[in-house]
Image (cartoon, rainbow, N blue to C red):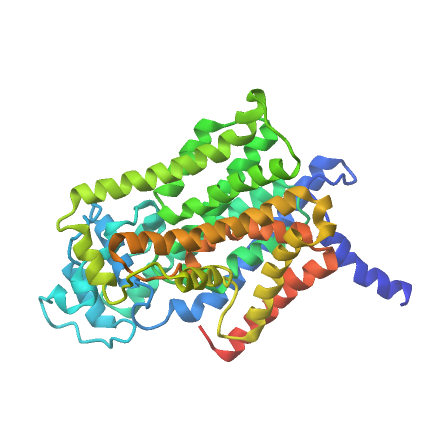
Length: 456
């Protein structure tokens, strides 16, 4: 290869491998600011791509199949200054909106009627998200929902709250990249995995608290990294972060659980027994975050049960009674685990399937291949991800079975809060050329194929 051409090819690769700690002409501080500047440019580019990829879904006519109408009613109640009680009926405002714009498999019925019978709608008209969903995951939607609009454009405006969560999550991911001293290419791969996941894109283009998953997982990882950098337990801050995560959505607890599991597995692999002196320094923060998230969600369920207008079982039966089982089926658990490991798959193009295989296949390689024993922390983190996926795959159907013998597998969107951890492990696993393909080119081609095909 001619020298000029080799220089032309190697220059972008060398630029993409710059780190915030890399000393420049005027020292490390100046190099760090340049890294931060380019990190912001890369972040803006990824966010713009996510906007383009989600645009079709954001402008999709009618409410989405994934309970968007119930989430919309929850946000509408928050705009009026109260949290809906468990067992409350869907408001007439939401019913009118459903009738005006339609919903999945339910065409519009017109806007003329002054009153609509809630029992004619899904789940007998109960605002069923109020049974177990805490309010913090809906906060950005309070800025975008109109409350009195009954048009498709009003629904599109409300859906922009999900993009606000994307911006928040991207900002925390850049902070994580700074703390981990990631190269620009590694940071780009983390951003792409977190923000261009088809499941995450769908969540950010609808009204749902699932759009808060990536920011929640990123906040958990960032808090843990700060505690490690400062060599302090940070139990109080960890507890606060855990409480906030638990009040965003209960199953986000899988993120701090995975961080805790990674620390445990790392110590087990190193045959290390923490002493009393360093136990809290190593385990204090992840333990506090996990305990805080569990406590927050449990407290919320108890509070909603105390506020319930009708027994919780009545609402759950109206919502889930169509699918019951006499025993907890292993196939349901396995289906949920499979779905959790399919967060990068979309029916729009097979390229997403290849991307998903490359990402989660690399995690499996880190766990199983002997060569990765030189990276014990990466192996512990990858193993912890699979432990968390299995735990969530069991917990969700088990809780549904206990509540009323309901038979439902864990949805893939419930594992979205793990994407920041997945992204970091993958970015640290691949070499630059391979990471360029897995973390940038392959998902980029998948998004282009999706846009050209016009698929949501």
